[in-house]
Length: 126
Picture 1 (tube, one colour):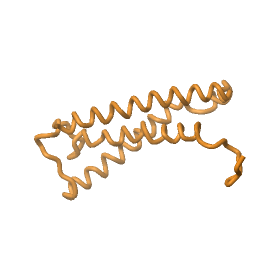
Picture 2 (cartoon, rainbow, N blue to C red; picture 1 turned 90 degrees about the horizontal axis):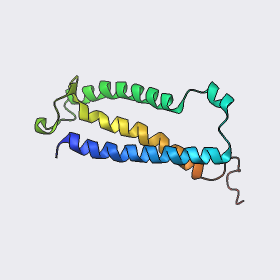
Picture 3 (cartoon, helix red, strand yellow; picture 1 turned 180 degrees about the vertical axis):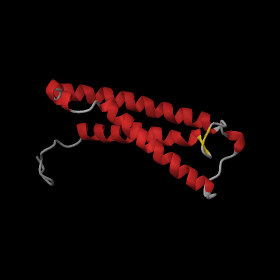
Picture 4 (tube, rainbow, N blue to C red; picture 1 turned 60 degrees about the vertical axis):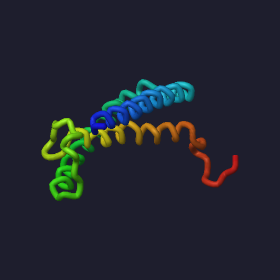
């Protein structure tokens, strides 16, 4: 199995989770009445935040992956990579960054919407 094939499955699962979770969060926000036009006009769009986060993390990934591959800490089987490289890092290595940006903040949002009610004191039973 090539790294690209493995990553495509991994990214597909992350994308499905992202889309489903964003739909659930949107429904929850509408039910709670948290969507106001004045509030959303002042804040950057959620997708813009995801894009900026992705951009920053991809730059860091490019720098540090090249460093650890160049130092010989990590190596890839040349027969299993696509051949597309950013420096000396194969493009497949960036899939984990993309998946992390899709899944981790989304998971945080889902847990925040389904977790305990906000505003309760810690340790309160009601």
